[in-house]
Length: 462
Image (cartoon, rainbow, N blue to C red):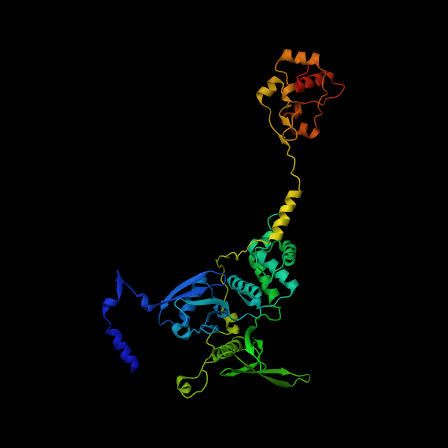
C-alpha cells in the first residue's frame, strides 16, 4: 500500500524539476549522493551515485576504476559517530548505513588477507596487498621483529627506487621514507646496508618477496578489535577463521575449541564487553564473514523472508565469494597496465645531512689535467705550450714575462742570461699528443734535436 502511494506521488511530480541537455536527461543534484573513496596508494576517488544506491553500486565503480578483478579480498570501510569502523554492506542502501556526510567517506582496505599470497593471480592484486601491509606495519597493527623489518624495508625500497646506486641512495635519502613506528637512525643505516643485496629484482618480484616474508609473521591476517575484560581493562581480541562467537547487547561470548594432549576436544569460554552495542555487533559480523570466507567452499544461503518474519536475532549473512571460490574462478589476465605511485616522503634526518656535508668538506678537490691543441700563433712564435700541452690546469712551462718577442730579443736573452734547463716531458703527455708520432726522444746522442726542441720551448738559441 505504501509502495503504491509512493509511486503515484512520483508520477505526479511536475516535469519542471527535471533538467535536460539535448536528448540526455540530467538528474538534479538532490537525487545524487557524493562518495569519496581513499585508495591504498593515498589518492582519492570521487563517485556520484543515486541516493537510492546500495553498497554494491559503489563497489562496482571502485573496482572498475582500479581494473581489479580479484575484488573479494577487499572492502570499503567507514566510521560512524561513535568512532566505530564498519564494512560497507553491499546489499543495503548507502544512506542507511553511513550517517556522516555528504560527502560519504570510505577507505579501500584489504578485508581478507590471503593465507597464501602466491595464490593471488594478478600483479595488481599483489601490489594492493603490498600497500596495505606496508601501512599495517607503519601503523603498528602488524608487529614485526627488528631483523624482519630491515629486510621488508629494503624490499619496499627496491620496489619503488629500483637498483641501488652509490652516491644517489644515501642515508639522508633513506630517511625520507617511513617503514616502522618510531623509526631510528640505526634502522635506516641497516636498511641501506641490506638494500644493495636486492639488485636485479623487478618491482613485481620485490613485492612478491615482501608478501612471502610477511605471511610468516604471527599476527598476519588477524583482525584486531579492542574489548573490555571483567577487570575493566582493555584487551586486543584478534579474529581468526577458527572459534565461535556470540553477542548480546554489549556482552560478547567467545568459545575456543582446541585439542588436549590426548586428542580430545576442549571448549574454553571467554566473556568480554564492548564500549557500545554498535561495536559489539560489528565484531560479531566480522567474525561471521571471516568464518564464511576462509572455512566454507560456498556461502550459506540465508533463510527466506517468510522464515525471517518470526526469527529473533540478527539476519546478517556473508554474501560474497569464499577464498575457495576466488582461487578457483579467477584467472589472471595476460597483461595488466597500472601505475605504481611513489610513497609519501618526509623531511630528511639532519644527522645524516650534516654527516654527508662533513664528508664532502674533508675530501680534497681533484687536480685537473687538460690537453689543448696548439694555436697557429703559438706554433709560429715559438710559444711555451709545446704543441698545446698544459700541465696542472693553470701552470705553464715558461712564464709570459720570459717569452722573447722576436729573433733579436731571443739573442739578447741568450747573451745576458744563462740557458735554463730543458723541461722534462712525461711519456704519458707525449703519447697523448696528436702529433706524438713525429717527436723523437731527446737524449745525449741527438744534440741537434735537443737544441731545436730547446729553442722551441724557451726561445733559446745557442
